[in-house]
Image (tube, rainbow over all chains, first blue to last red; front, side, top):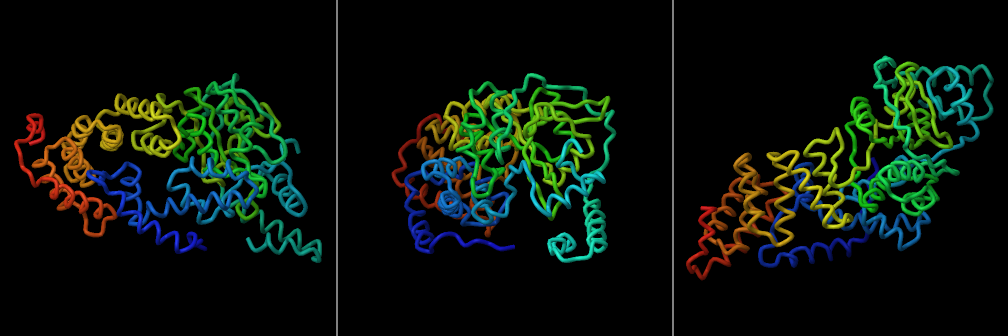
Length: 124
Length: 333
């Protein structure tokens, strides 16, 4: 499995430097998302991953033609786990949408359809 | 499945092509879901679920509009396209459908990936947005549709799909196409109405994932509903306590953590948070005791350890001027 690297290392360094500063008086509470993340993964940097992943996903959406303001809002509505998954392999995930099918794919699927494996075409 | 890749080469004798197609078929046939008797389907049809015919590759926005409009939102497919459609991929990503649901004030709840959950949700009145792979594993054709009912007499699943308002699919064909998409499905739930098949952990996860986007009163409503439905579930208590603490209600939060720890004494994260809440309420003796107990309970390699160490140090620094503590601290002795 290919694993995308997160952003420039400078950004990682900044995140590491900033992280300790947020511990003011009694702010060492472990939030629910952090808690759940720790239950599922043994990755100490999971929170930083999510922040970097958000930036990566936003940029990727822009590159794929999404309006910049909308890309920011879209990335902001994703959960930490979703962000990390999208940052790793956005292009390889299912993108539902196809209505028409073309070329050799059509022929293969037509055969499969006729013998009842698939159901792309409704009224054959 | 190399056979399918080879099929792209144009110059091959017709007989070989046929052989390849047959081989592809045999392989595709392996990945079938268990067969289900159509007559055992629940007899239900949610006839009033609206329909938004899809244009071009936009089945994502259309299917999403279908379930959001059913919850009373004034949306249509064109309005939702900017939030979920990706022109270059000619489609919409699953995670983005969930994200857009959150942006409209609803909690997207992922169903258990099995037919029983799908039947139960539709029977309870919820249209279910599903991902289907209408092709085969190596030649996927991803498609979103909304299940609105079942016809046990004919053994059909009824869908709002593509340009068809009431599409029928044979149940086993449908289940195969759904299984090829890992049985992915979700419903859009109002924050105070967990769906029929929701369990405590799933609902809390869905709520926490939506928390950054939902209005605060919606998160509050989702947690309150969870409290009344699953009053003794540790994760429900945990999330409620974190929420109360964030809102400055340390005493309420401390009580929830204490209730959780009575059920699950080894929960170091909850004990750490209890320590912080007690320190906030100036109950330093109890805070220090709980912080140290949390540190003793956490595994050395746990990603939560740094936060707990931080609590121990911060609280130890605060306990210097040991004046008499407020009376209410006795509750946590």
